[in-house]
Structures are given as C-alpha cells and as structure tokens.
Image (tube, rainbow, N blue to C red; front, side, top):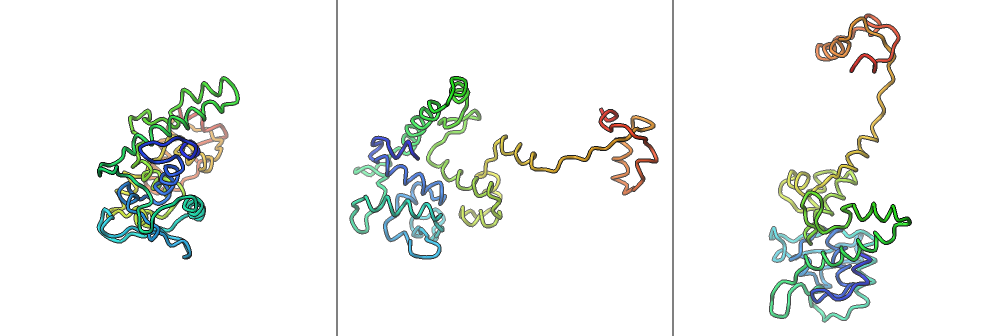
Length: 248
C-alpha cells in the first residue's frame, strides 16, 4: 500500500487512489467491476458497523450485497475521501477510460508490486539479508507456482485471511458471497507451507515414552491394539528403554 500511495499515476489512477482501491479489494472481497460502481451512497459510515454496499445490478450474483468495513479501513476511506473532489453521484474509482475501455488493473498491481519489492529488498539490514530477500518470491508479480498477483488476487487475499483468522467457513462463504462453501475454502483460500508448518508447530509435542520391547514388532502391536480396541499395558511387552530406538 505504501508503494502505491507514494507512486506516480498509473492507468489514470493516482497512487493514493490505487492504494485505497487495493485496501477496499483486500478487505471487502469486492471484484473489480463491483468496486468500479462504488459511489458515496454505497457507504454507510455512521452505522454500527460501517458498511459498503453494492447495488444488485452491479453484483455478480445480481443481488444487493453488503459487507461490513473494518474499523481501520473505514478511517482510511474517510481520510482519502476528504482529499478528493468528486461530483455527487459519480463513481469513486474510474476503472474505465473515457472511451469505455477497462483500465489495466493488472498493470497497476505489477508496477506497485515492483516498487514495493525493491524497497523491501533495499531495507534489509545486511548484505546477506538483502540477498536472501532478493532470492525470495515475496512481493513478486508471479510466484514460484506460476500464480499471478493480478487484481483479482486481492479477493483471494480477503478469503485467505478469513481462513487464517479461524473464521467459521459459513461466515467466510457469506462474506465471499459464494453459493458453495467448497469454492470459498478450496479455491479462494490459500495456505502456504510456512503457515502449515506453524499450524503443526502449535500441536502438543508427543510424550516421551521409555520402553524396551521383547521384539521389534512393538509399533505393529500398538497399532493392532488401537484398531481392535485393546487396552493391554505396555509393560506386558516391554521394559524401560527409549521407544525411538525400537521404531525405526
């Protein structure tokens, strides 16, 4: 966001306008066309909570949609809007050219990501850290899996962040405005390896068992007991010794 805010005009939008557009996209999940329809009347900032609505004719599912605004997003919007001169009833974001052609939002994302990444790499405190950052895929327009950070990826970010914050899947589905919860959780929600590792790391550590077995089939016996519902004591088979030395 910082790179966009201080950036030059790209595709007819100032840096401040692009930053606000990205924030709304990533914190509401609204699509490009839906965001382009927003006017002052779309926002109810005095309500509890503040909300932003999309008219049915502009919604992909042809229903009036209403999404609550994060408190900080509402504050940022008020600050941004106070610095804009926009005619009453006019759209807040001009995502089409005067001739009616769609502006290239992917070009905006690519330009702003490149600036943000260059700053992030340069902010490394040591040469080694700068090299590590340079070798990473962080803030690249295309990641190692070949996925592009186009404008629609902001919607994916919204749903992924809902999943990472342990939002109930049905609530996430409602906020994403999907007809199928599987689309919300399986297509729009992305979990990185680092996040998987963090989740596994939060699991309780396995107990340290010290046993010595009469034969090396202890693991098989335990598995069989588990399947059959047996409750035999380990001491029927084993004496003190590290289990890890036996199961290999």
